[in-house]
Image (tube, rainbow, N blue to C red):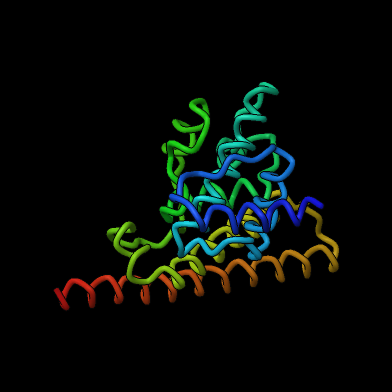
Length: 202
């Protein structure tokens, strides 16, 4: 039933002006889970898809604020005691990529997210233009960056053991981080090239 509601919301927003979609927190939670898993019900490269995502962020953030929680929890990126979830990582990097507006976040979360720096977020000049001329690649960059953040969190929070199995696990985690980092840089180079091409064509 909930999935049908998400599909209905996606269809409804395509028929009107693309303002953030109003939805209950339960539906917003599922939209955000799908977004974090790379299976967003709406295409973030369309105004309608972004309206659906932005509505989910607003609805879920409002519910968390009502419960007294600051969401997303940017402090977790700084080695705080709370675990960073895949949804939080995706939302924060979605803001960096321009798919989510900072105004979509609850007031208490805005400052924390704005002050957050992603140590390995590749430099992409003019993200707004990139979202117009290289959106599929930028969306893939967002997804890869969120995956990298989660891999880094797992690596840094893994128990420090010296047995062979633990060391092998950490080696695999380190390899996944490096692959994600290389993919991020390659995608960032493509996005930057598309932005420069679009400027030259003007």
